[in-house]
Image (tube, rainbow, N blue to C red; front, side):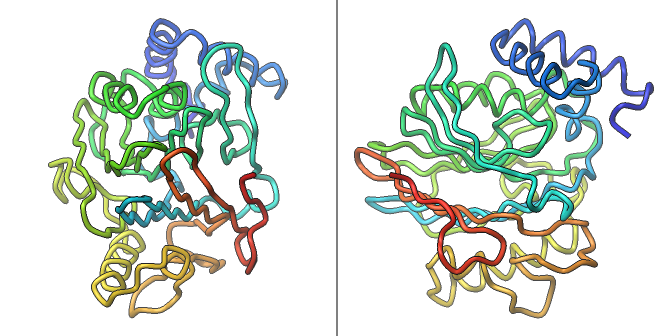
Length: 295
């Protein structure tokens, strides 16, 4: 669908702007295409998928726990066929901070969950915004955020370059007590400090689009309601919330073959954002113990 010739002009516009604004990220796409042995145009289109169509199967749920050591928990939900093919990548660019990130095949970092050497933490949820004529790929902006040395730099990028498809990000940084919820897309951006435990599924809560400006799937609605209810009942363990399969609606932890959004939980990440470092761990879809823990 995203490589359909009908999208060629839109992809070209986003590609040109990405190359102008973030040339190093454009080089990463060129390198990715070379490694994949695929035409650059197809790889760029794939990395613009959420800007071209609003119903891509990118879901996700994030739990946000503020405090002296903020905690971010995140379910990475994607196409079930990616299970066993997604991976953690440790990247050391020629310029910009090193990073470790969850990656999908054929996709640049910046749209899942990650942390960089500056102690910046990023988790990402898809927003299905309507009538967006994107000028820049949202995944390109997500990758640019991981090049930032400070939380304020990341927030400034979101504020300046949001003519993209819709994303929600939870951002934090070691040594900075703030826990920030950022929703952007379609030329708009809203950033809010998280001051009480919260959960965010994949629809905008404070961007101002309203229900008429976005698609809210039954799964996203149910996950948001279930997570909010658990927090209201004093369940604040992010892993317990993200592994939950209870409630009257569709579950937070997603393993059903007939999931209506065609998504399953592929990984769960828990970040403890300390005063000097980020300690984090990653769980596979069903593992009881982490499959990765930061040094």
